[in-house]
Image (cartoon, rainbow, N blue to C red):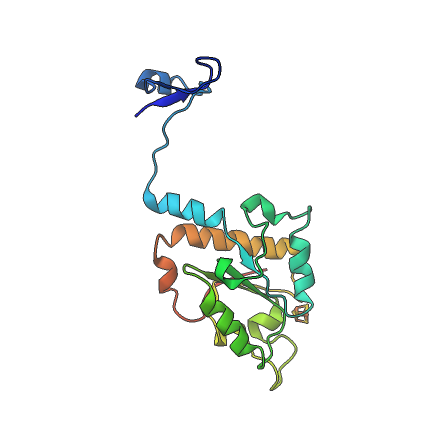
Length: 193
Ligand code: SF4
């Protein structure tokens, strides 16, 4: 294995001998080196730094979800700047708002169309338990329809609360290993807020 020296030969990259253990032990040299990690950690890092949410705003909570994309909370810092309009390009669905019984089959279809692995955040009281709307028209918690990883409490949750939920989800994804996401079964998760 060789590392490249950009200084050599007028900027043309040339193979160079690998750094010796003494050079590595000497600390940061500004030169290329080696990073050693486990496959599970590498996969967890990649998943949590490229998690694209599906667009799924249902009601007032969606305004706070949109706000989470703005400069103050800035989801882009975590590789989440793209809210995808296609479930086939999404890893995460944020259920933001009350879920009517009419929309329940729709959200299930969108969830099924997302490629695996995939995660769900239930944003706000309505999505998590029906909120103040205890009536026949609304699903009393979106975990009746899809499995939820993180519940964010509030009516509506502030963008900071949603960001907290996203960071909790990142912790969960890093801890669950390569295929642990598939073991979470139906409808349990972490509550924040
Ligand atoms: S939790 Fe509150 S803000 Fe969110 S959808 Fe329900 S009523 Fe609207």
